Image 1: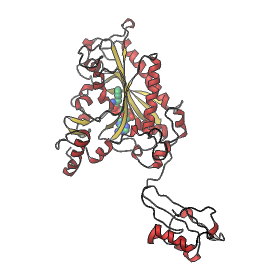
Image 2: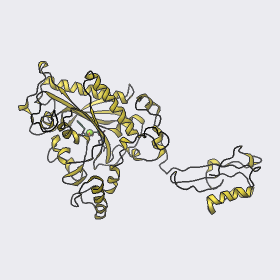
Image 3: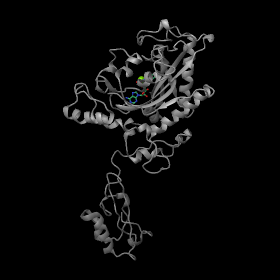
Image 4: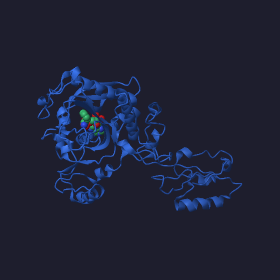
Length: 442
Ligand code: FA5
Ligand code: MG
């Protein structure tokens, strides 16, 4: 797990100055490349109010985040007659204690996800969260009982079209007041000491069937509301049984995409032991958690996977693109009107850098050829050549400005020096009059 010394020397001061995190040379495995991703905040990239236009596009992950937030808010308001609201956290620090990421969620001590080969650590005391569930225990302790967390999460995973070591999740959690008169009860004597393991299926022993069913039905209703907010009717979606140490029963939801079922979220009825240990209704230190009167659910969904399905984006790596050919494709979407998403279907573009091709014309009656050539030479320098057309003394010149990025300085070229699309037949008569407007040479 050791980083090469030069990488540690690069990343350690950055961790300290940006996050106040002390990296340990013996256990830190956060590479500079991963560090560079930490502050990108793709799920928050929205145009500042009043400044729409090029360069201010809403990132597709931010669009999906807004839609989910809105759909869940509406569903919770509906199901609670407007009494319940939920708190939204979308900028919690990505460094957490391993206890919060694993132990508080009943992840077994020897679970592979804890290893340095699977997770990113700055030290044994401090790691990059591997899922948004890492914030459950602290928020329950603060007294929150309905909340939504949007977060960048980090896993040392394979890199392919649907996996990436940095991705974004949203965690929803809700506690419900149980109704003992309806048989919804909790038996604290039956709280598990450990997670129970993947073989432990069905309801938790500590929850009565009625309590478990009520929570599961509420979970399904709210996850369905979120999915209906995102996807048009008829989208093939299925629920499958799953296992998570922190929920029981547990489920995953899959959406059919590019010929196969793609898992987009995990969820379940929260282990009562977690609520019992961490929930403090008034916040603060009250030790007397009312775990006999509440039970709850949680879900964790992957924003990239949802955006891939919704927009037909074939590769998860595209989300990190700063290329306007990617970012501006979503400009027609308004998160307040999810149907506007129907207008967008991802259009593939070249993986090579953006290349502008400009065309310029001049009018022989208003500008002498030699005046024009001086303009060309002063912009393009000696790289400019008239190419094969020199022999024809063509008076139409086509400037091709090529840049690695829009801000790089353009280079001039003339017809024949590239830009086949701009090549023009020389039999047009007087090429000096092919254009009737005068435009700048670049
Ligand atoms: C979890 O992370 C659980 N914390 C989810 C959860 C929360 C379950 C609350 C129960 C209660 P999982 O590892 O399956 O589960 O990830 C959840 C979702 O994140 C996946 O369905 C997928 O959409 C997304 N995801 C997981 N790994 C990757 C990856 N490497 N790249 C992109 N998306 C990923
Ligand atoms: Mg999973």
